[in-house]
Length: 111
Length: 115
Image 1 (spheres, each protein chain N blue to C red):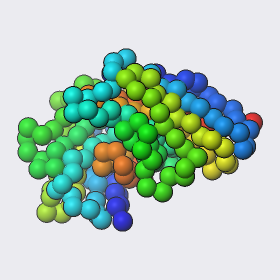
Image 2 (image 1 turned 30 degrees about the vertical axis):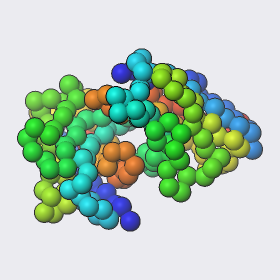
Image 3 (image 1 turned 180 degrees about the vertical axis):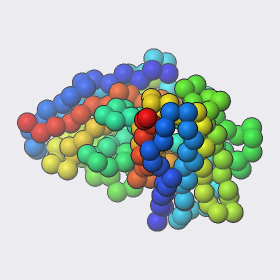
Image 4 (image 1 turned 45 degrees about the vertical axis):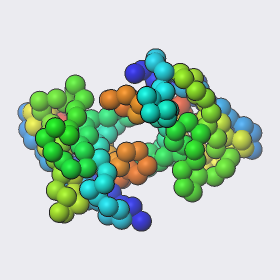
């Protein structure tokens, strides 16, 4: 399954919202009723970190300014108010079908 | 606390071999499948291989790009997962991450394939 993200670069002002879109080439609805779409954050020089799983569930310790939404083939990650520590690359990934696959990444930078 | 720690990376010549190791702690290791994901310099994330919790031969998967060259295995008595990499190519140069799909990731091990 191909995962396409947009934009590839997102310049944002501190304190302002940000939004990243992810579109899959096939529906990510699994036969078990779950949609295995996750969002990962990779800060500079760091490994990826799970932010959101199954479309809209925040992982432990993730600030509530991060939210995920979507269904089927279209998904969105929103940051309500961008902070300096949010700088990095954000990836969507699907684990509905084997093999799992990742989007190209969206680089979030501060204006 | 869940921890994943990779080791075994380094510089190897094309055609050479390397074995990565991932030491896991803080969770019931046999309850989880484990995966390797790689990231080429300046690039995105690419899934490489996965192994089931039991580690039986039928419980392994590989990306087409490494099939026949890489072998994933695990030692549940030592809470470790391995990636044996043979016939390495320059395009295999990457940071290799061990992951407990997909909530925990290690810090990564750099593999450089160059003459």
